[in-house]
Amino acid sequence: MRREFSEDKPEIMDLPGQDENELRLDLENLGWLNRTFGGCSAVQKMFRYIAGSARRLTLIDLCSGYGDQGRNLIAHARRRNCDLAVVAVDRQFDTLRLSREATPAHQRIFFVQADARHLPFREAGADLALCSLALHHFGDQDAVTVLREMKRVSRQGAACIDLVRGRIAVFCIWLLTAVVLRNDMTRYDARLSIRRAFTHAELLALAARAGWRNLKQTKFFWFQQAVRTESRA
Picture 1 (cartoon, rainbow, N blue to C red):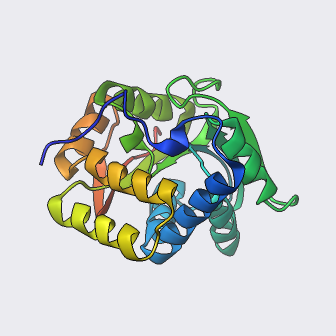
Picture 2: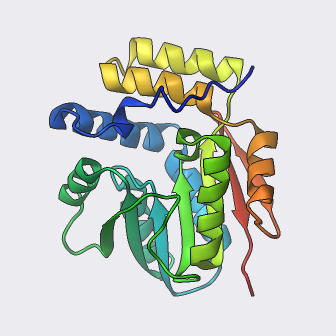
């Protein structure tokens, strides 16, 4: 099936000025999906690949949303005796504010409002870069730009986790949002997201176009995939 992407048809969560309670519920739903359907474990696995045995790291989390992946990674890194600081980057101010409210004050997460296509960081300014379940929000050329920015700002490695488009995936997301996650924003965005996702071959080609070296791809259950680039060293 063809990818259904249009700049004129954004996901609701990408639009500013949303009702705060609706947005919070949508972000909480996404967090539940990450915990229930392997998103958290996929991010942790990619982190272990690109972090290696380092004991002190800074990670840029692009399109960070509710910040749940950043918070989970800090806890995961701590269990591995790694001191991790996360820079959470999102374009939407309201999303960043809700993420900050959900983050304990003692956690080393720093919030930056910025466009993932134009990151306000110097080259190799962080050890790692991560983008989780967000690349499908971009058209093909913009997705290449995001991946290129991830490569530019990370000196050790980068990983991008996203959905996999397919007819079975579309049906499963439709069923999940018809029975379980039925609020308007989550239902609309989830159904649109899976139709805008990339196939395995498409994501691999985008990363290659972005200049990712030593490129590796991982496939996960529940219609998820990842690409990663090895250390620059």
